[in-house]
Length: 241
Length: 220
Image (cartoon, rainbow over the protein chains, first blue to last red):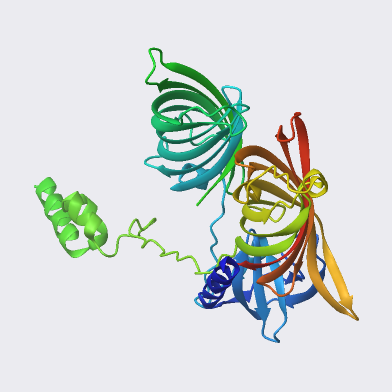
């Protein structure tokens, strides 16, 4: 049943493809590769003045079709040297450090250690300004004696958004649910509220790819006499749109 | 007298010759004058740069089916789905979910009616997030001169596996082959090892659960 649903979604996606963009070659020639990568062989060249249609983009490679119907992949640097119908150069967004500082949405995965347990987090972020963003994360902690799931909402301040490497500061709150392991004598599940502060580093790698490292200090407001304090270290990667 | 005549002459000049306007007329009028040579036109219209609307196909959605050997619990079919985002031509990140079921251990089979796990505890599900690297881009020749673009990739990631009533932190490592059937559809063959620590059979150990599967994927 699930496979069927996926197949239907696939068909819907395939149907949603847009129209090709016609351009004219303005270099002495451009090279068509068999696949979207520098390792794929060049099998065809298109001379200056000839028209090609740009059908799609995958990373920095463009799927094109020549007037003779040959299909291949052309690198972004060569596509930028072609002209559109009105004579203007084809302008394509370059994903670089500047687009990183102007990003709106970001998604990522982090893994690490949460008070001795392994932890995996998935997060989505929305940038309110180049410096400030808000994040919603869902995490699963997998320890020897208990499992936990937690949801966090926080505000992240990025000190130097225009630089490749920038420290970040985090402040947030959340809810944690803890379940003891099935192989242990059954104790009750519990749900508690948490608050956390953190520091981290965000490093822009390439295109839409970002590396993250962070430390957070949690306070779990338990129903017992004492609050619990937990340290968390995580590293991971994210991409932005 | 002479100076009056000179003044009159200059006034006449300033009225009749626009070129001499600098001497007689107010300076602001001279700027507005059409014949003043313009060095830089400050009123250039901003060019309206419109980016072409080209389809982006950086996401890859796929469904797969295959076999997984669950350590101590036999080999069974596995099915799953995953979505990948291609960051560069070399690197992609992927999130996946798969499900299978554990068979009976050899102890359960030999002892007759001893049951270590209930039916629902035998369900084996996992999710993971992985980072893949295309190491060998190339072409695959299935027959004659018909070539398909392909890439061999290495992949590793972290995730969680639910089995025997518990979730376990799981590391997955593996390799795969992606063959592009056309520009948007690919076939993927994967071999993946899921590693997690377990104390299910009394002693702590790292369990290796090797999975191999065949999948179809679509770029969008």
